[in-house]
Length: 208
Image 1: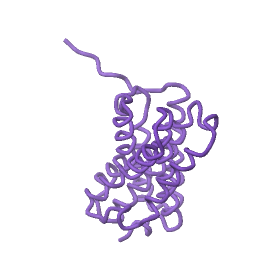
Image 2 (image 1 turned 90 degrees about the vertical axis):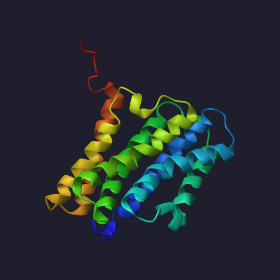
Image 3 (image 1 turned 30 degrees about the vertical axis):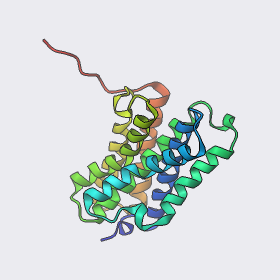
Image 4 (image 1 turned 30 degrees about the horizontal axis):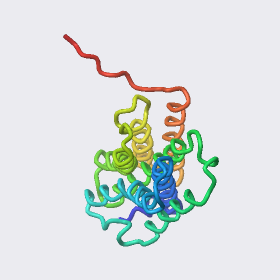
């Protein structure tokens, strides 16, 4: 069963939206370090396709950007947009907001695609998280930034909420489009709240 059966209208848009926004966040990470256009393009591509590539390899699906040239084109286009636009457009928390929207969209799409390829609900939930987070992890490692996994505010948790909510609503019989919108909105809202008010989970404390 292809993933479009789960997201009959929004599947391509969730995929492309997450891809473009993650690619933009990768290009911005390179641009802020004064890198070349080639580096911006590389960062955009690896950030955009990183999570989806790992997901497809794990669920036995054709790697999406190898079989569909639009994916790479979207990533490279995002890099060009960042390159040719004024720096003032991207100051402040632009990278974080791009990343937050992409996080929510890609978590939903990743979970939907996994379900569509016959993956059981719990592993499909994890595939949503992998899809949403791995690209950002690769971006941070390449940029020499502290990994998103090591930051105190909620990030992976927001992806987990979007993925779990989509799967839960789907299992309850809610339509794919409605489930996707609700789940993505919830994941984005949690991530936005975490950025705005520095919400984080309790840290581990050593116990004697």
